[in-house]
Image (cartoon, rainbow, N blue to C red; front, side):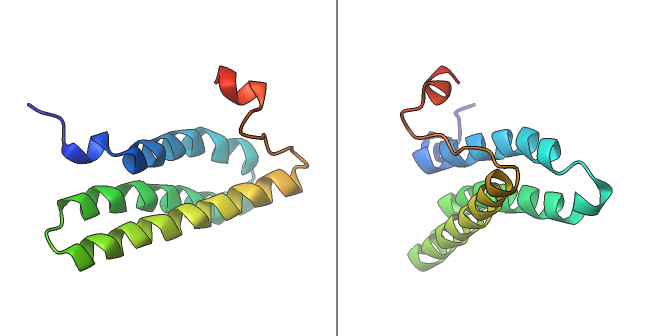
Length: 105
């Protein structure tokens, strides 16, 4: 069976990577029971990011397709803001795109 076309999209690949990394990252920094709502929100934003790309890729209507891709982008920005909050509150550095740690990952 041939792989679905959306799996070849760069946007899908990035969304999937974000989802996978977030799945491991979020529990590490949201361990307390009172963090459970925030943890769930971040995971849902990452899931929405990926799944709206999947759904949008199957739409025939261009306006509906663009709307779903826009929802995906909004979800990714929501998760990004949460991750930046974690870095700020935990006093962790944000790696530059050329950081050696990123190149080894």
